[in-house]
Image 1: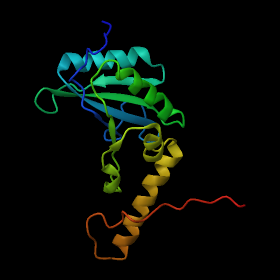
Image 2: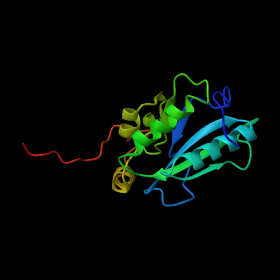
Image 3: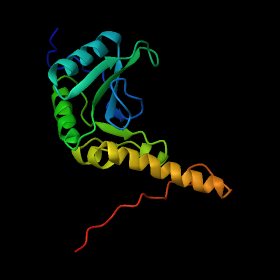
Image 4: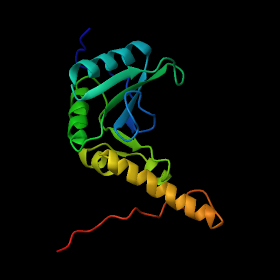
Length: 177
């Protein structure tokens, strides 16, 4: 079944979540999982089919087997972690603008190590590029840094509070001028 303009009007929530769930088609460091919350089983299936059939860069699209809340389903969209992801994903969002009534898309990057990054922010190519790790190495480095700091603080028996490692940043080399 093909979707017509505004077929998903009032059905898709405006906030897209990234890396909140583990991928089915690969490892965490190699696959980005974007999720859309959709009201209704059939609209969720329609969105899944639209994405899976229309975008060759999408590894897999799948609708949750059950409701996450009353009448709401999740559509999982998996793609490789690549530097081209923000541009491709925003192309998908531009196409969805023809099917929905969402005027302002927002995003949340789920970062277990830094809960401040879990804040809702505008969905743009730049926010995706700055929030979502776009390579397996970048993903692993971010995760390893947070785990190392956590381990050091626990080993040193430093009194802890929730979110106390949020101010730590990973080391990045700077270019010589």
